[in-house]
Length: 102
Image (cartoon, rainbow, N blue to C red; front, side, top):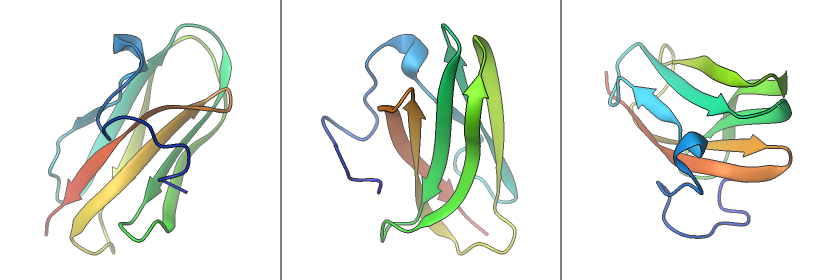
């Protein structure tokens, strides 16, 4: 769940390279989440609604070092706030908010 193991603010990250950029945000039809890895690792990038229900898993595989992107589409989704969680090698690396507007 989104709130499990939560420490600090929802937009905090442990290091600059741990951050997730979301652009555009707010979005209407599509937004892109971008993040970087220093070394190969299993990665999960999951989107939740405000009730903590998983609405999408954008990434769930081992990725190599470098920059990575994952699109999140708004078509068929309710307007409002969504929450993302980036987990790298079993540790929550970053969390934040995405706003979908119609």
